[in-house]
Length: 171
Image: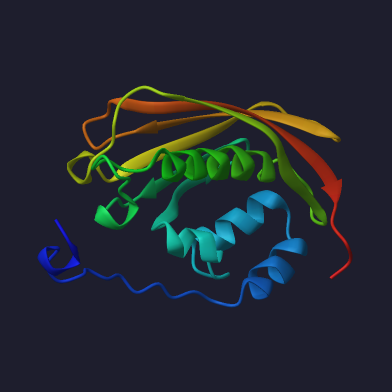
């Protein structure tokens, strides 16, 4: 097989907003209020959310839920969704769950993420639902877990995460 027999290429257009608008707006809000503002369209979603087609569906202190569309643009060479997409979604929900527990001016970043993949994901598996929950909040380190389920409600992956908590630079 050569490139002449591959057929027409497929495409997807990705658009996003200036990420610094979101960062500046979120820095002035508690983490919970920032997540609510993104969910409600008061602040634009971060570019990664637009790139991987995920968005917030539910948020409360210590817990978030996102959905993520899957299409062929995230397939790997064996014809299933790349595990990196699922890992990215799990990292996001774990971090955002921790974010909901933080005061204004405080940020976080992943220290460690352990992902367990339980089943393959295909286009027909989606949309995916990812839930993040805080296991233990902290002033310096916080711990969270995440789970991704397919449209049939089957768990496709789980994660545990440790996150560093730190003051944000003044914006």
